[in-house]
Length: 220
Image (cartoon, rainbow, N blue to C red; front, side, top):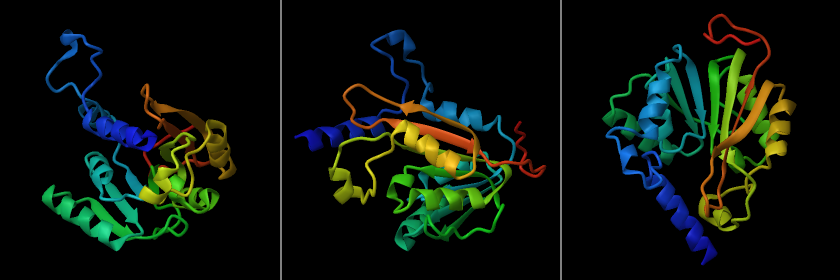
């Protein structure tokens, strides 16, 4: 029953894109959604080269493509990448390159991208330290690593259902991992948390030392 409740919370979370109104009808404004707000923030960013590591079916990859110069969607499953290519074709996304590769061996050269994204993929890594090291390797000096992953939880069913290697990460442990990979300005914070939902999303970021004039990012 507990596992079923967890799955139900996930389904509800996926369906719930609009802002929480807390019962206040005055907050029901057409077009007021998290998706629209996230896309608006993309307008503030310079053209960047991004790697979506563990991209899956490519939904987030194509969101990144709305503002990025180039996006590399990387996944180890050829079947998954075929679905991603099909979706990109339907949406006429011309600035995405799909590549097959593992978290521990990314198919990109050193210093290829400005942003490396690991969204709900780090807990699939057999060796998270190695995966983060690879992500940092492909970053240009001054580039940023962005991680969205689950806080440590006790939902064992995700191992069989999704192949999770780890049941999330403790906040301090995730921060330690990013610092251990050589990143600076590391931050870890809660990205999403709802009452009754066993899954809390953590957002972590860090900057690769140095500055690259090609990245469009400046860090101190």
